[in-house]
Length: 377
Image 1 (cartoon, rainbow, N blue to C red):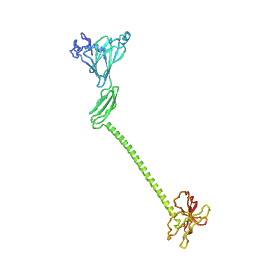
Image 2 (image 1 turned 180 degrees about the vertical axis):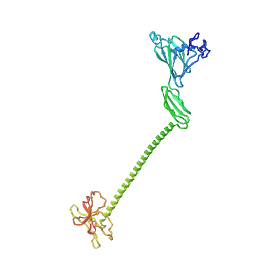
Image 3 (image 1 turned 60 degrees about the vertical axis):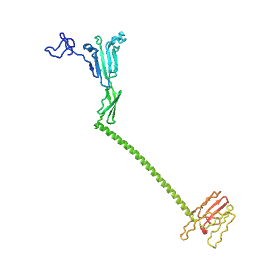
Image 4 (image 1 turned 135 degrees about the vertical axis):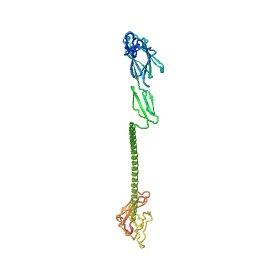
């Protein structure tokens, strides 16, 4: 029971003392206090103001939200329809009270509106004082609610920084940080601990972090290993190519030496013989076989050309059949000479002498032959 009208009792005055009857007193004393409203949502009625018996200017309604939040106040005006018909909205014709934010020195008047529900104030802080005038003819409600998120509570040995609807929480002893975002009146995002002993969730995060680090190490090691293998493969290919190239060069050199050895089929003692190639005549000199063989006669009017030198065959070693060898004439081409020809064993001159090599000089118009030793090829 809040009020009673028994006997001479006044409305709203009652005492809890039991005096042997109904427990009421005609003159119970009361003291007016400030009404502190800490709920996130509530309503202030004009009827409660007029029946409280307290001076509205001395006993304000204090809307107190949590630190970091703000207050939003909405007026529900039941005279709005009448005001729309009479157009009596000029210069706050109906004043219901005023709102004060002392920390910012803000004073806002509450005036009647021509709409049924109107947001009349949004505070900048979490503490707002509402003063309502005591008028029996005015019927209205003030609906208030807390807006935004309260300041987050950092963990032990931690800190936080807030910027509007975003906040960062960290630890004093390490570099751990958590980021939060305000949605409505709650923070979205998790907050860990700054203690030295990790929690089960932190251990799982650390395990995941170690797994990620190990995967990164494996990838980097694979890249380095692949690079090393590729480099070794390139080096091996280069070495093999160089060895093959050297082997081919050695084969060419050996082949040249073999050709030079095969050219020893040409005897040491020979004389170049010139002939008039245009007339088809072949004049030659017989090779010397012993001291009884006369020296050959050489036509002095034709120049002599030194064609070949080779050591005599060793008489102590058996001679092989050289009929199938190809004897090459190694001679520097003279100016104007365009053809140097190699003959195989078995070719004869027009006189029936065996020839192991010949060439033609366009300067002299002569054809030159190399004859075998003692009539042999």
